Image (cartoon, rainbow, N blue to C red; front, side, top):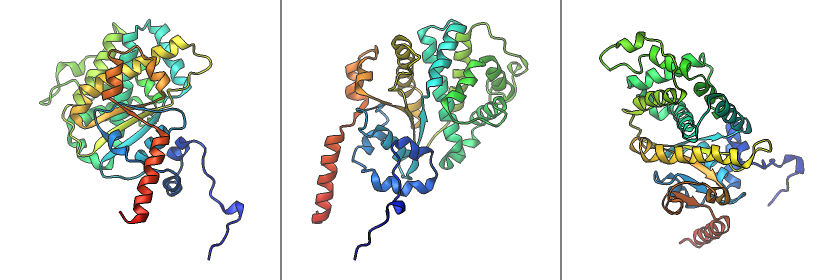
Amino acid sequence: MFFLKRIEELQKVKGDAYDYYVSPNQDNDLFEKIFLVGDIVEEIEDLDKFFLIGEKGSGKTAYAVYMSKIENGNSSCKLALVENTLYQRFLHMKEQKSLELSSIKDIWINLLYLMLAEHIQENKDAKSIWEQLKYKQLINAINAFYSDSFKPELVNAMEFLDKASVSINAMVEQGLFSNDFGITKEKSKKYVEQSYQVSLMKIRNGFEQAFEKISLDKEMILFIDGIDGRPADIDSKQYFECLTGLVNAVIEINQSVLCKKNMKVMLLMRPDIMYKMPIHNLNDKLRENSVLLDKHQDFKNMLGNYSDYLKGE
């Protein structure tokens, strides 16, 4: 016998998949019921795939939320949102520090490294990482900079790059740039910035030293969402300068440092935005490094799988 529920007894479905990411864990059951998971998850987990591409409503955010919130044995995922205020921070830094386009890429690299470092710290399956001295020194430097109150969001991470000299001196104080056998003279020196570009490279070097001996049993993925919509107060040229720096940063670190450590960053993008990216060998990147979401084909595949299940095949 079936019983009908009153309208007020029905569970309210959230309109944006991201809302399930920031909501309490008790909403996970509802999300699992309403989100139809396709076979594409394994392709998303492929370390050679850097871009999750699909039209608005194709499920990009939903897949990132599903893989970040629902426990699975293959990967540990985190979702970070690019907020409108982040573009303003980039533009302010570009004007204040006379940044070139290459510097925007370097800022993104360090932002992504900082988010990954925090994700490793949060991950219960990576506790053995704390045995690595350099990583411990890096986290101590981040905690010292933020007075143990860092919130793992890109806007907050930007502060670490905006005040590069302070960040570097925190790294120096923790011995991150010293050798493994003791404290070198560098620890006693106070870093004085001569060039912001040099400071960015120094910070990047600190992150990469900390990552050097990290070994993860479970793949780690950092999804970046929220980059499809251009803020109304940012013109198209400025918007694409920021995005181009991000895309090039993701390609560079995924193909060099991160792939060796079982980690990657994956961007969630609409195809029309991706096609406008002035990056080298775009067609190759789309073919070899992208996962294309087709909501209509995914739905057909899932209906077929469900039909086979009912038939007992």
